[in-house]
Amino acid sequence: MSGSETELMMKGYGLTTAEMVYRMPDYKEVLNTFVWQDYDLAPDYPKLFGFIEFWQKKIEGPLHSVHFTHRKLIAPGEWRNVVGEFQLN
Image (cartoon, rainbow, N blue to C red; front, side):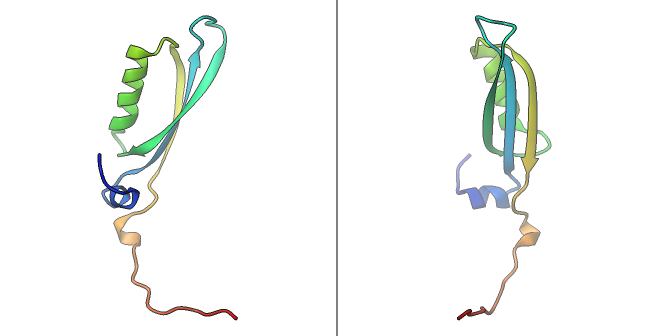
């Protein structure tokens, strides 16, 4: 994925934030959290699910739960051409 954040958002990407709750490798009864954030495409979330797969294969702490939210910050229909300005003294 390449391009500026604005270009990504114009292509439909939105900011996805996930909180991973996982068990500590040496102390399975202790839970810890990790926050992950990246631009991703809803509703398939390929980057998020790719990261979860990476976690399950490479990270020793097993996942307990994952909570995530997705916010599409800019949509193509939200751009307007504004002509004029206000000056405040």
